[in-house]
Image 1 (tube, rainbow over the protein chains, first blue to last red):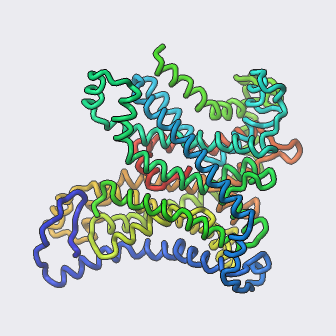
Image 2 (tube, rainbow over the protein chains, first blue to last red; image 1 turned 90 degrees about the vertical axis):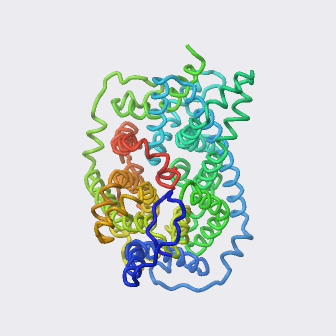
Image 3 (cartoon, one colour; image 1 turned 90 degrees about the horizontal axis):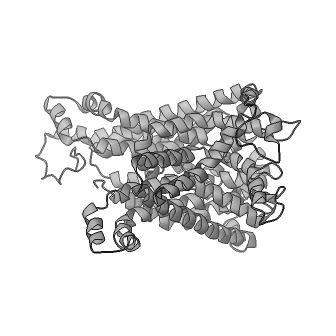
Length: 319
Length: 270
């Protein structure tokens, strides 16, 4: 069926038969419009992905980069991977750290979203601007700011902790030298940058909750907490789901912030899958092995990606 | 003070602090930066750090690299994307759904899934270190979401407008260029801004592909901003961070209204 349609139009009755020539022309139009982008996308995304999978079955390494020579190793990279402790540890690390980041940013985001609904105009505006500025900070810049905030010796965070006099002398505390502390620093950065998107997205949905429901519940003497839990949360569910899926995908893949703050260290203790892949492929130059990790990383996310895509396709789009 | 306002004030203090600290440090002379007791306001405000940042040997070269690559990425993805978006929104045809699924799926790939194969391919084609390598990588990440976001703007145009033009005998091409494109122009601008931000901020591809200092883009320049004689120059680094972030922050404030929609389509990854 090739009828020109527009969004939101009710499913049209079958189009009146058109003269053959014109009909054919219409059929060609979308194809012509799509093909430039389609060709380029095939070249820059589908071809590399195909090549990634291909490379994951080879022993492509540093030497291959110069000579172009490599051997097929079949499923070798995959069996190495599945029997390697480092991979499983990195996977576990990634899952736990992702859970911690998503939980932190979604909970704070929900709080801020709700807070926004209870503020007068002036404060609401101020909070929104603060959120947007934090969100807008390029992550390379914010990672450097974080390094400076937590710098041992002159960093303002260490000075602040020192003033509290709870932890003793913290002036020269080196955050990057201890796995737990390195995680805290990275967690704070990711949550700081993730909250604005989550808070503003949720707030957009929260302002759509019909006022009558809330007022009726209040009249009935329901507490604010139970109103939020029963009415608001129920309305927020679809948005919350979308936001959580996106956060999981983003946090699971996070690279820049970890790389710029701890390089995956100390040792390998903050090497989540993204960093682990990068180190394998571009520090050790075991490119075939790195490709295999990348494939597995992608496959592990496939389920979530599918849910997300279905969600996005459904959400108000005509399909 | 109401409880909500108090909470808002606390939240703003915490969330604005890192940005405030970046700006505060950027205006301090070195002795005030490197002190165990921090100053919350520069005692002797100075522009030295900014001057040092922009007069660095590589700054202008790296800025030029960034601008060339970003502009090329934005132009290519808008031009290719607008036609694809029109096709996916104003026409129904076989395979439409599957194309949209592919477009959305590609965006969700981890960075390394494109980085590794592209590195190998560009190495073989002798493209590593060239603008082309970066532009191709950025088009791969930016074009899919450009198509998706612009499609969202096309769908909002009522069918009647298009039908009216067709009644007047306008060809498909005419309908596109004189009716539809002008109507989606504001959407195209915000899509362009999204693309700009995504390409401007990229560190991973530039860091891996551009191995020579004169080829760096600004994010790589920023991350490697150290003074060889005195270690990390935090004043200079914060001033450079301010300069690098300003265009992005300004753009974010401009497209505020479309931010949420663009983000959920996968633009501007966290």
